[in-house]
Picture 1 (tube, one colour):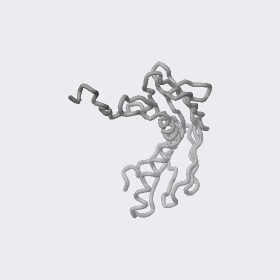
Picture 2 (cartoon, rainbow, N blue to C red; picture 1 turned 135 degrees about the vertical axis):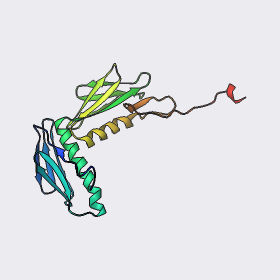
Picture 3 (spheres, rainbow, N blue to C red; picture 1 turned 90 degrees about the horizontal axis):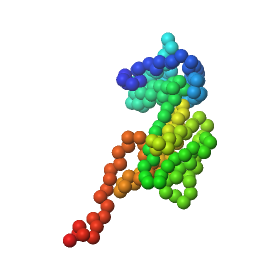
Picture 4 (cartoon, rainbow, N blue to C red; picture 1 turned 60 degrees about the vertical axis):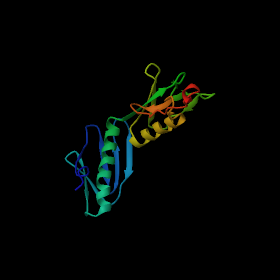
Length: 183
């Protein structure tokens, strides 16, 4: 048995789970998520817990077991508490500001880069701590939007300027040796 797959997913109060065959719909205070899973997995609601079981012990089903359980746990966590990804703005003159719901990035281009949040996503920009927060209830979408924001100006290895994830370590390169050092 998969160590992750056999763990039940607890359903917190205020979250409704509807299982119809391999389709699961989870609704909570933050939003609603729906996903179709493989028909090889059996998903049941028992005693306020989601339980994932597999029909046989072949390699494909063993691989799907833990993945299915992890995706269900992320759905339940997302609609009940939500997810946050934090990005740091590093560089002289680099900043991020909110313009209504939209995010405006000033990261060394001749123009500000404006990013409009899709449905289910919200941005927060703090000028003092130079951080951007991407908030939402769909973990996959939050991560993808954060990656898209980071791609506007990825951190460069010589000075470390750019947009990076909170706590991300950037390996620095040495750069040129200079005129006097070559003698």
